[in-house]
Length: 453
Image (cartoon, rainbow, N blue to C red):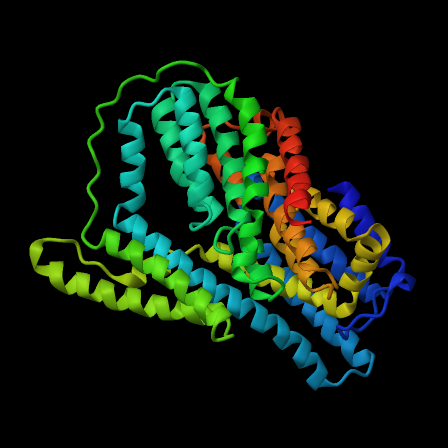
């Protein structure tokens, strides 16, 4: 983190590094007010990184920072003689980016919440617990399930769901829980990298139009390698024992559970069709899918209201969306966007991509995302107006997605599992396996070059 901040501050103090860009910004990075906005963003992100200890939700500091940054950007624009119309164009660009991302994620979260309410995930957890697998077999099964589940449900949801299985079966064996949770973090991040629905950064690249939907599946083999390499090392450290037997009863699916899963798949197809065939933003296809879900759940409510089934309201699932995450995206998009309007992304682009080259810079993005959340890192990359080919855009999608596995605090999945594990999975228990994870990181980049280069 310190090295990253040093580079950022160096760029702040060296405005002569600015280079021509197709994005019209103020170019006022050397001003006192401009430097102040960078410091505000760094302080706000410091609170985000210490959320586990302060218990302050991550959306609060970044929203405040975004407001302060844009207030100063507006003052700088006025001092530079920029018209109000041009200022509004820059601001509305960020609003458009955020609205498309928020609506897309809101629909996905509503579907996930509805499937959870209909006991889809609980039934899956119950099935794995009742099968009485040995620790090593459970290690493999939970990893593979998490890998593929995170491709359609986000990596945080996948890690928490399967993490409940690991705790239910191996709660009495701290060593298994520790290794099992490291396994889940790697699997969740790797599985989310090859599908636009699996990770926010992948979704952002797709919505920005730098790669088509099916292009991302070229990352499937590199993602598998990224997971398989460290998992192979860890497998031999898993206790070769049988967990204690359990008498848990099977969880029954609620009415309409399977149909909701089918509707989710059709909604994904709708989003892809709107983007690929109609050339409209994919969130519009997601909203169509949301309307179908609302109509179907109305049918469920009417049909089972007289049969003792608890009243179902789809808007309860909308309310239960991860609003902290959605508002965090607001702060990130507008905070990074404001810094970009002042001119800092152009400086960062010149230092990283022009100075180091695209491949080295994209690998560095993954390492940075192990410390700084990959969402602001990727949003910054997308707004640098880089001239990269498909291979490089897929490379940065891969590295930003899987780089967070290097440290437990590098991804939402890792942070959430630390809270769920009752101190069995910690920063240092994850750090023990960082060399193996780094080997998987390097191997996935090499395989991407061999397969897609």
